[in-house]
Length: 98
Image (cartoon, rainbow, N blue to C red; front, top):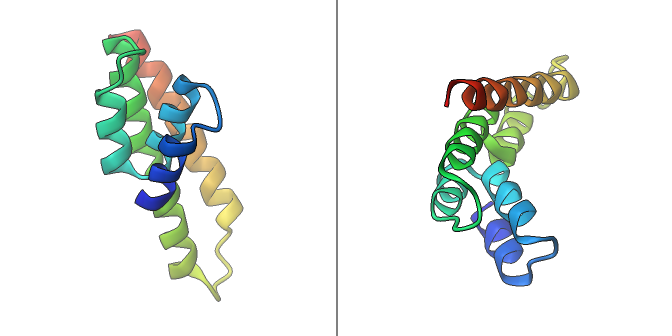
């Protein structure tokens, strides 16, 4: 997943803010570092996005979970939706608190 982040940052397929958010949602450690180093986002927004990305776990974690539950009756779609809801709630709560 770090390779995906490098690809995004090299080719910059979207505007810079969306690229940084996408990197944060791809893989926690590298994504959080890139968000923290952002010169575009405010400190409160950076903190809320890092907390949200941590709550979500990253696309990398979703791929690992998918591999782990392969062959079971567990729903990957349900798991992903719940993680997204928690990430959005984390972002909103962080913005309210900060």
